[in-house]
Image (cartoon, rainbow, N blue to C red; front, side):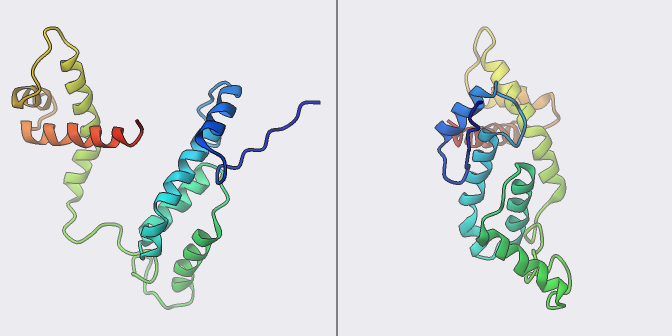
Length: 174
């Protein structure tokens, strides 16, 4: 009889998660160890923000728990219940009340600009990388970003901004 390995993403290391993930044949299921451990790290990294009153982040962390098959830590459950109950018990007027989960975007947020960035930054980044891997290799200057952005209807400044935003996000995983 084969022993079942118990994996606790709240106490195990990434190395433990990787070892089990390897034994499983590297499935891409979001409820496998590596994905669960990544979700736990995200949740723990946002604990301070939640405790400082970020209701939107409460919802994000609950989503991570659900998506990755995690039992939410008690501090997150309490925070969620407090905010949910504020509407249930008629203390908050709506779900975007600060007593509940708050407005999803800060004042002055530009939805169209955010959508544009969300959907274009990765393709612009990929195009810059493709150009950098071409022969001859172009210099990393305004001309490179102008060339990459032109295909997607954006200027060199925005292309450069998108490229470096993705690079900064990638740094977190290196």
